[in-house]
Length: 217
Image 1 (cartoon, rainbow, N blue to C red):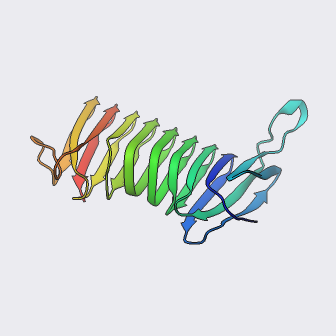
Image 2 (cartoon, one colour; image 1 turned 90 degrees about the horizontal axis):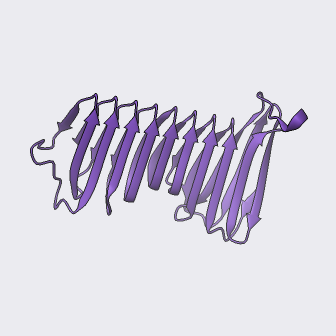
Image 3 (cartoon, rainbow, N blue to C red; image 1 turned 180 degrees about the vertical axis):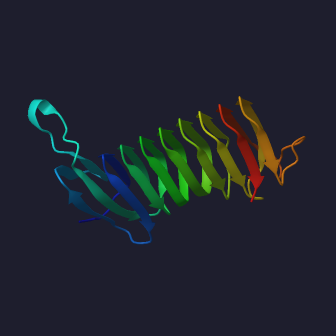
């Protein structure tokens, strides 16, 4: 399915696998493969494209457990995307996210932009080409974030998990790291003065019951 003149995209899935790719074309494209008893709805409201995946409802409005779908979405690279899953995973490349979140799943981002990343009971692994006013949070799961260019403050935190943050020379960052029941390690960064470049932006990293590693990449 092809959609022209899309300005924003919203994707949600239950028991599904979502793959999103940003491309140079001006239109968006949606395809999916259903496994078992599941439904995928694709709807357009003005310039907003909405994609929903969930198991088919059964007796007493309960969801079946066996049905799920693989959803693949391609969008113009500058289109704003919001994506969420429950009991599933999100993989993306070259996508501009306003927010991406999972519960009982994992998030894998490659060469993306993001405003907010959230995860419960899973793993976050993100390579961000650009970040502005970034917020990354996880409960019961590790976080791995690498940022090539930073133009705003960043807050990265987890409860019951380790954090590894990689920052390039293009991130003018002042790093503040705090932990409860864990260790903090700097690699390629002076631990007594953890500043990269001009230090214009604050990168706050915190964890409870986990270690923190911040490295220059």
